[in-house]
Image 1 (cartoon, rainbow, N blue to C red):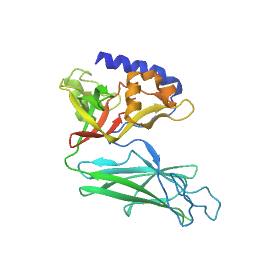
Image 2: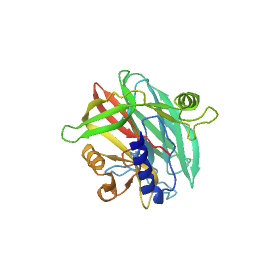
Image 3: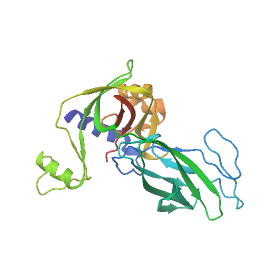
Image 4: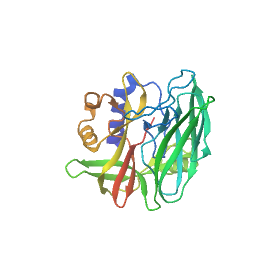
Length: 282
C-alpha cells in the first residue's frame, strides 16, 4: 500500500499543472466519451458520424454517449448518459431520459434502463424543437454470469496478453465509513474525505487472459484540453505504458493520470477479461 501511495502522489505531481475540471468518480463501468453515428432526414455519410443541416443553419445535431461499448451488466440495470450539441429531448429505447443541464445550447442527459439477459441495440434518439432528429446506438450485453470486480493490476504480460489482478472492495457511504473506522484508516469521529474507501483484505492474485477486442479505458490529462478525462487504448499500448508510465505524453499525446497506480474495474466473461476501466480517484 505504501508503494501504491507513493506512485499515486508522484502521478498527481506530474498532472497537477494541467488539471482543469475533473469527472466524478463512479463505480459503473462507463466512462469514455464516444461520438457515435447519428441519422437524420437529410444526411451524408462520414467515417464515424452522419449529420444533418437544419433549416435554421445550425451546426449538425450530434449525440455523444458516455462510456465504452459494449456496456456490460450482470443485473440488467444500465446507465445511459451523454450530450447533444443543442437543446433537445432525448429518449433511450423509447423511454424519456432526464435533462441534467444545458451549456450554451447543448443538452446533457442521463437515465437508467432495465433489460433482460442478452445483447441489445438501444436507440438513443434526440429531437430538437425544429423537429430534427439524431440517433445513436448503444450496444449492451446483459449476462447474469458476468464477473465485475475492482482490482489493482499487479502484472501485465504483453507476450501472453494476460493480466494479474489483486481484487479489492470499493466501499462508499455509511458502509465505507464503517469499514474505514474498523480498519483504523480514519478515527471514530472522522468521515471519509471523498466518500470512498478501498479495502484489501486478501492477498490472493488472479491471472486472466484478455480477448482480442478488450476495451481498455484510462484516465488521461491533455495539456491543451480536458483533465481528467478518459481515453481508449489497445492492449499493446497499455502494456507499454505500464512498463514506462512517463512515456504517455510522447506515445499517446496525453499525461497518464495516476501512472498506473489507480485501481481498475474488470469485466470477466467466461474467464476472459472483456473490458478494463481505470477508476478515477481525486
